[in-house]
Amino acid sequence: MSEQLALVSEATAPKLGIKQAFILAALQAAGVDGLHADEAGALYCESRGIHHRDQRCEWDGSAVQTLKSLRKKGLAQYRAKTKRWQAVTLKSEVEAETETPADFDGLRGEYNALPAGF
Image 1 (cartoon, helix red, strand yellow):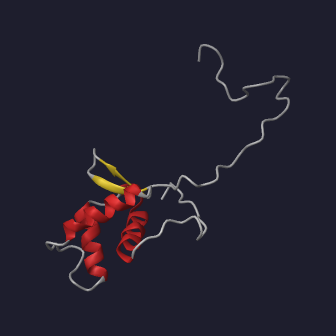
Image 2: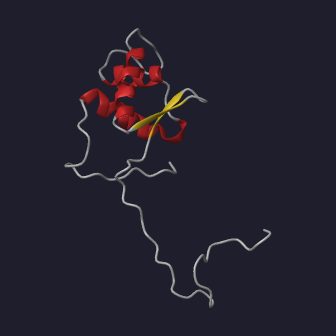
Image 3: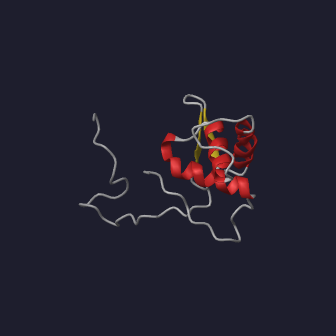
């Protein structure tokens, strides 16, 4: 999985119910491929011993409500193009800052800029 999820302290972490936490973990495990809502619901049913993940029941579609609540908390996003849900990196993640060298080959300012006409 190329994206990295932020580690959040217990104090700043959103409160999640059992189903929300399970489905969020399933989204994180799916990575960039994401999950359809009914796939997430089927995984939850499988965890409760109701049916195998490859089968579907009338309750699997109810996972969309859980996914929408995760989206409201900023933990999931829906990709309309693929019709799949994905976990997102938390906004509270501290971004690594890089130091700008004071002098880069005698040049000051933008040292990562492309040359003119490139």
